[in-house]
Image (cartoon, rainbow, N blue to C red):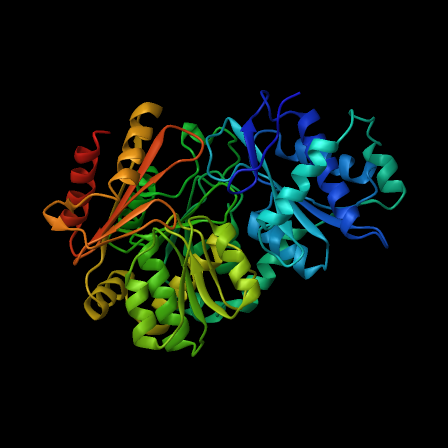
Length: 471
């Protein structure tokens, strides 16, 4: 029997290999038993949604049968839906959990299973450990009740989650101002669950849509909204004279953006813009929570605004609990997952993208000018990253050297004055930083940097790779 274990954001596996109907039933039954153990009085309720991947609806329906067979009442999305919509729905409808059948930004051959808490954010690591314990103790497969029988007995309900979620975004955003502004926005759904969302909110005459049809193969491109995957969007922005380009990953929780000139705006810059807009324009306060690989511009902003700032290990699962425990203004990570005060403690690529557009409208400035002013006020901060696919031996040797020698002494001619090992090896210099962090699942070293110029940031990464012998 194949082992099922959760990674940084749910369980993901190859469709037809480990991601099978039997395993979806197993993980659903284990999750159902975990819910029942936490709610011994009454019947637990769960919301199940699915993205645009191959057989998503069929896998979701099978999961629903498994939950229902274990005595958990199911609210099932009546159509493709984003992860943030399921997270919002679990909280809004006061359900005990949300489940999303999705592999997020992974290649099309994958699917997955995410668990969301009743509070509208990712299940905590402690919750996941409890589900995994239930998995280990799960007996043999049992015959599942039919969908029809569960429906007849009141354990199954179809609901339009997407429309209710979009209505919520309409309340959070100043849609009247966005529509009166009238400028075009390009939206690349990357064949994922966010297709049609921006058009429905703003009107089809204001949105140029890309890759907004159902194609579970994603034309062979993983639905990850990073610059190298978004050349069509960059071209569309300039060709149609759009004020900005927005892209979302397969399940709609991550954001990628381009300015009116077709220049990619990094997640670091988006985070900083959100802090500036929410604090200066909307008058909101709260702490800034960022992951270890995120720009130090946020530290300068926190100091200037008198806001607390906290750094976590990499992964949104470390940010969501902070948003539940304390008053957080903005929480985010370098990979495009961002959450803000006033919404669910969850990444939401659609909402974040439109919030940046709202900032453009309210300030009457193009995105390029907002980004330029940010660097002008808080100093230039340029980032660079390479994911090195190397051998396990070279990866291990590089990490052993960094451990034994307590990091590198100099990088690209810059003396290293301190080393932070919260999550990897972060070398701090007078002008920036260099982070070396291993992947936990494959022979990959991720090397990140920040410096005053793009050339200097790249030089830090290239020199570190040379010194470690992993190029």
